[in-house]
Image (cartoon, rainbow, N blue to C red; front, side, top):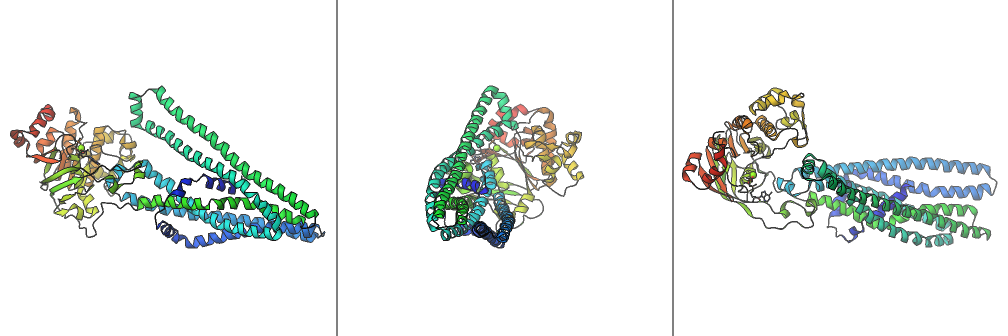
Length: 622
Ligand SMILES: Nc1ncnc2c1ncn2[C@@H]1O[C@H](COP(=O)(O)OP(=O)(O)OP(=O)(O)O)[C@@H](O)[C@H]1O
Ligand SMILES: [Mg+2]
């Protein structure tokens, strides 16, 4: 099957939904902007396409010359000359088409590279709110499939539109000059092909999309079940027979649609070649009669039939040109949609560095609500039809407190009170709605991003380690750290003995999401990473899970090392941490309801005392 036939089928499979899509104004100029760096390459490409079209419309004329002037006049010299010329032309055409493919690959891959880099860089600059809403899978699809789709549509459009228009014009004029009567009769046959091909193509398009969906569903089942966490749930709750049946059903759907697709695509190809054969038979029959009447020569019929077979491909492709064009617009638009999403948290143009030395953290009348979906994300990236439009509800109300330089402030309160939310405002993962958060008298919104991330270190409740070696994970915090630095940090985090006992030591790969470490070990590695970075402000979301007596002392020493001489905000679940804090803030429903030291608060009674009685008193004496 020729390349042309495949291209025909691809065009037919394009979704016709795009035709009803309204493309935003300005999309086309933006696409052209992307093509600008490739101007000279595109020019060469167009020349190659034109040359290719010209060459392939000349060879039938040479063959006609052999038949009419060579064979009929017994001119052997002419026969040999024209045959050699036809051969040479074929070789030249092969070279040109190779060059054409090479250039279009350069163009296409270059475009993919540019688009991918642009989108990746942009996504990196998005605030955490964006990532907490979007589906990772949808984002990756944008970077993979959409980028490739945009490129394909773009380069195909170029060769399809320009190459085929020229080809059809050249061939049609040659045919009309040779015999306008046969040309017109042969063209009448064209709709006979185009109409069934359209119908089959439409059906194929539907099948194609459906099979993509079914494949994605089947893959989802696998990725969900085969990662450690999913496999664990299956082992604990699932029944193997039910799991297999679930997968079987999806796999069977994929099988059935595969059979359908194969059948319909063969129907498509058969229609195409059948029409070409019928047209050839017709041209030979009608033309043969014309030869007997003496109206045209034998060579003309051969040339005409050759032209006919070369005409159908380009004509069908041109018939879907509009569809190709719209598809290109829509895929680009999907990418532009991501690029147009403004990062809500950006460095201020007049940003300043946070001053050196010990710094205090001050919350001044802070109100905060999580951003609404429409502010930070796109429906298509959340895999929902419309963005959730629940109004923003305020999570923090009028929160004011100061953490003096070098002291520890503990946040305690019931679940959902807003403790984690408060901790996220310090490192500017979100921006406050009213009031301000300052570090060393600099509003975090006015601080440079580099100085902010140098100053504030965070250890989350369930810290993440990249799937890489321990060394790489530690160096992520400070690339220039030496092995001695790393050992020191590991010692302070009370994890050195465990790491040095590993056969590969620092070169041990911590599994997907750091799975081969226990929860407590992972937390301590995260503490070591933070110590290596040695930030002046520390934000800790203490893990609730790892409170067993054995590691309690180790964890406590690690925490003490981390917080020593640093300005610390710790969401505390450990009585020992709370007792050592210089100040305790009791948070309830987004407000600070009590503040003081442990003894003061116990004496005061109220929420803290209740929490102490229910949660912490049991830890007494551990
Ligand atoms: N990304 C988010 N978008 C919208 N609302 C959120 C988001 N994260 C948290 N919330 C809401 O904000 C409120 C405070 O949540 P937060 O995580 O700060 O509680 P917490 O005090 O840390 O609780 P816990 O002790 O259980 O960790 C909750 O009502 C929660 O539903
Ligand atoms: Mg929390």
